[in-house]
Structure formats: structure tokens, C-alpha cells
Image 1 (tube, helix red, strand yellow):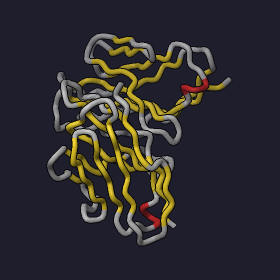
Image 2: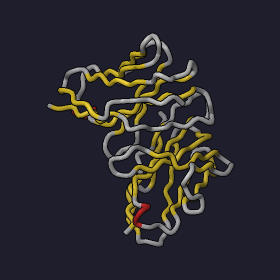
Image 3: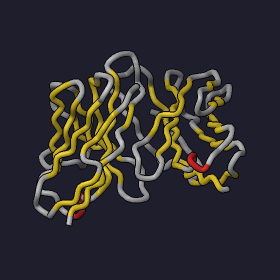
Length: 112
Length: 116
């Protein structure tokens, strides 16, 4: 699976949008971009995933560049409970042998 | 839907004892379950992949005789840390992938193991 690169940490003001970038310049055509987050002392939580098109769900939006070399996870109105480590992972879909490989992630601190 | 539970959530044991951690998919069947370990301020590290009815596949550097994995049904996998030592103290997290159609993994809440 392609390597992803994320900034180690970011701050965001409560109520503002949090934009978390991810670089995946070696991503292949059949690899999806998955985002998970891990709140302190909990298991990771699935957020969203996408291939080419932008995606939105009740938690976040995912913007993928046209060349697919990078993406941005957007939390439109960050709350204090969004403070967590966010992981961006490139993963082939529907491959039963595939496992998630977690990098360092981005530690997002939402401040009042 | 897609809830994964772990039991116990926290365990403290003496050095040399064995500890069993259970991972259950509560509302779906999971052909594959994964076990991760996470040390403080570090990312999750995959320990092993477990498929129902077959032997687990361990990642390089993970001792299969020390970390026994059993995946006897589509909703239950267990990890037994045998002869635990203080260096085995960590946060152990399991995840499960639904049987059909998905590649998303759903994670349990984790088990904090402290070996004295």
C-alpha cells in the first residue's frame, strides 16, 4: 500500500473548520484513501473513505485532488470532542488479505 | 451497527501469569479479525491477522508462542498473552472486518494490560 505523510500536529479553534492534509504521492489507481481517528485511550474510529470523487458523510468531508496525490479531511465545525489523532491510510478495497497500516497520524487539538 | 467489544477493558497481572483478551463482533460476522498493540505516544502496530477456523498470521517480530490467537467463530477471537512480563504492558486493540463486501475495519475499545 502507498505511504502517506501527515503533519504531526495541528491546532484548531472550536467551531471552526479543521482541515487535515495528507500526501499520498505514490498511490495507485486501485487504492482508496481511508481516514480513521483515535481519541485518547480508545480504539480507532472509521471516519470516511474515497477513491476519486469528494465524499461527505455526517462526520466529515473528504477532498481528493484530481491527480490523487493528496487529500484533505475536513471537519466543518470542530468541537472539543474532535481532539484526537487522525490517520490517513491508502488501502486497496475488497482485498481480503489487506490490513491497515497506521503511520504517525496528525494529532489535532481543538481549543476553546 | 458494526460494534466490536473487548473484554476486559483493563487488566493488571503479576509477571509470569497468562492473560486472555476477548474480541467480539456484536452485530456482524467477521471472517477476519486483527490484533494490534499500541505503546504510549506511539501508533498502532499490527501483531497478527486471524481468520476464522485457521491459524493466525503473525507479523515479523511477534512471537506466536507468546501471543496465542484463537478465532473459533465468526464473532469471537481471543488473544492470550502467555507468561506476561512488564515489557508486555501495552494497549491491545482488536478490529474486525465484516464478512461481506467491505474492507472497512471496525475497532474494539482496547484493553489496557499492566504487568507488575
